[in-house]
Amino acid sequence: MKSKVYYYNMRSLKPSGSISSKVARLFDVAGFKNIFKKDDLVAIKLHFGEKGNNAYINPIFVRQVVDKVKANGGKPFLTDSNTLYKGSRSNGVDHLITAIENGFAYAVVNAPLVIADGIFSKDADEVEINKKHFKTVKISSNINNANSMIVLSHFKAHEIAGFGGAIKNLAMGCAPRAGKQQQHSTVSPKVGKNCTACQTCIKNCPEDAITLVDGKAYIDPDKCIGCGECITMCQYDAIKPQWGTDMDEFVERMTEYAYGAYINKKGRIAFMNFVMNVTPLCDCTPWSDAPIVQDVGILASFDPVAIDKASFDLVNRQPGNLHSALGDVGRGLKEGDDKFVSVHPETRGDIQFKYGEELGMGITDYELIELK
Image (cartoon, one colour):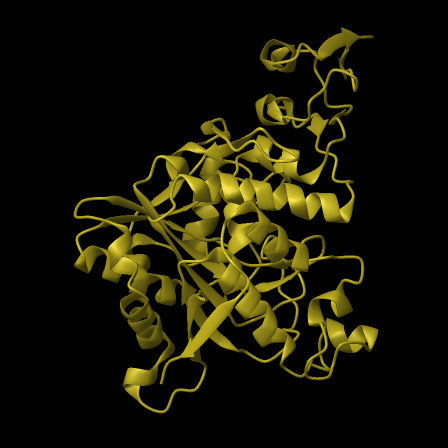
């Protein structure tokens, strides 16, 4: 049996056909009200956008989902987890400031903002998954403990994952900083010159892998399990994450994390992909490059694998934008070309939905239901 994916294109010829109206109708037609009960706390998971970025989902569209949840008796809150890299969203305070400055103020979105892993990214739960790369994964507590979740994803290209959609939003977006480190690399973090020998990392290392050597913390690579706890605990930004890993393994590790965020919400989770402003890089960059294809539309489903596969296919059916990164490299400009591999040749984004299907998160065989 195919998974249903509901779809609206970008055409608007009357007020009832506005993008905002389409978001609200997708909520109804897809049956999103069925994932929560009266007074349930409903996490609306999205990316607030890095400071300087402008391609993230428009807060006006997010408001439509909030209002629908409230109209059906739920209690919505908007949420995201802190970033591993040092930027405008690496702690809970700066993250909230950035979200509000990017337009997600209560007056606009009609819901409170909650940083899912707390001020210093310490609020996380261990979720047992028993998969190839991870036995357990770290999921941000305020996401893990919510009654239900609606995942709103800006679908775009990504320099490592190939593309970013529902699966990546579940994986990186629902993990604290330590969980993001586990996905990115199996290589031990490195201690920099900022180290003050305060020994906080030593006291909090679960494997006793850190000692003081010549007045500075030293991480034993043979003992380190890559949990990233030292990165989270260091208040001097002296311990740096390591990003290098095999591309295929990275995507598998990321997909297992997505499974960890998905599994305890099965039957209580729904997805919308906004396939517009399909930029060549993630919304974590403090800028937004030209879209690689024209705006496509908005999709809704209960299946994260199917909605990502449908979004991927719809993007690749478009001609590439000559005045974008695709034009720079001179590849992937025709309808049917793989736009994601064309702009990032080393990536294997298709592993996300293939491995996601293998894990049991959903299926790649979908029925695209275009609404008029």
